[in-house]
Length: 355
Image 1 (tube, rainbow, N blue to C red):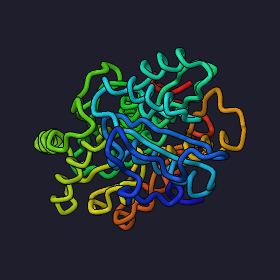
Image 2: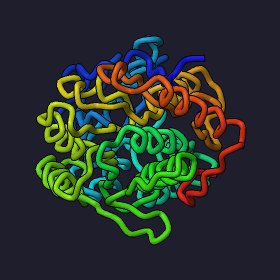
Image 3: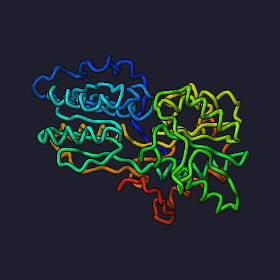
């Protein structure tokens, strides 16, 4: 049994320059809508296609689908604000896309409205559940690997204080924070310790939010505040804002570290690999690729998918440069915690978990 649950995301490479275009007039890759082509179109959240996080991962899934099937044509448009969601989705409906994918829970209301107005159009959404016959929902129970990450952080902390913050206060964000918080509490109970979590309390639902998925300066500011309060390991759930945390902890020569989210930070932001203790990953790329390819092949695209530890839809990335620094006993404990979550021996109580 491997010491770390690894989420294979199809060799993510964020050389996205070829896949990124000028919003909102990105031309399609893979063809021009000719006969026999399947046109899949993606609307990003405000973080943009190169957020090194969930938008980038979703686009990677689109690219992987195109690479594996020459009949798949892909296109994206980027949202600068929440006001762009509805017009961007409508634009792709009018462009005769076979499948329109919305990225992020914040797009749920807009996609629901457009999907109701266009019942013959196929849609998919990431990090939200839309109960309509023409919408396929993809969600991920990241509370599970975040629980492991909380246990790991508590075991690695030298100061007895760890921290987390979110981009905005929505369930796809707080689910990570809940899992992290619960994992620390579980460690404290198991090891008779009192490691504190700054930035979030699952019971009170009070915490720290950057109110942005792009503001790296805000990420740096919040991280410096946490460090001044004694935290030495920080889990930011904030898309590109999290790079501000990594840019801060990387300067500490190992005294502080960052736990990245969505996918392996050592792949998506390799310049900061030395500061990533691990990453809490979710298989957005694999889920999107499977959805696009299945739809192109004529399979019904309806209902929902929930990625969790049991189906490898979420997981922990390798420790990379921290491999030799994480005690083997702690590595084994983290792996066992994951096994106990899968077996139902550990119950995670976060209300943000998808159902």
